Length: 179
Image: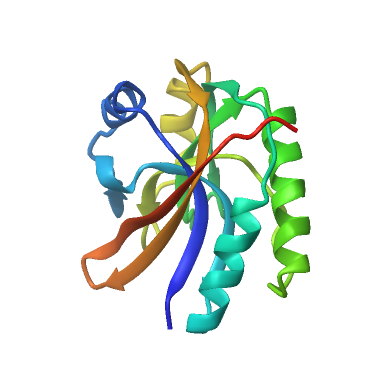
């Protein structure tokens, strides 16, 4: 069954700026340029027929283009067993409106609700095993302010999992259409 998510692709200058943040850290697997994105909605595994429903929902999406800035940093999970390091974005209001509309359209298409709270972020590294907390790293980069980028479309991704990590393939891009 296909494993899908909907995300914003990042322009190359943004990816390159984020890749510069990688540094040796026990248990860290830094994301490659191909893996960097900003997730709007993890859909998960779907039946083949549901892929068409997701595409129909994305085709109905209406939003104006907007600009985001990479800003701030944090981690998910407890300090002694963190799961991921991330970079934030600002402003979040247009992103949250887009996410809300996307969730509504997916619900109408029969796709179950998003069970996790939404925290707009770009995953920089996956963290494995007990290790010193990421506090020092995050403290050094807490004032991160990266490049701005224009959001002009959303993308549907196929996610393949392997022992080497996840690989992603864009199945389609859905441009902004004025509301």
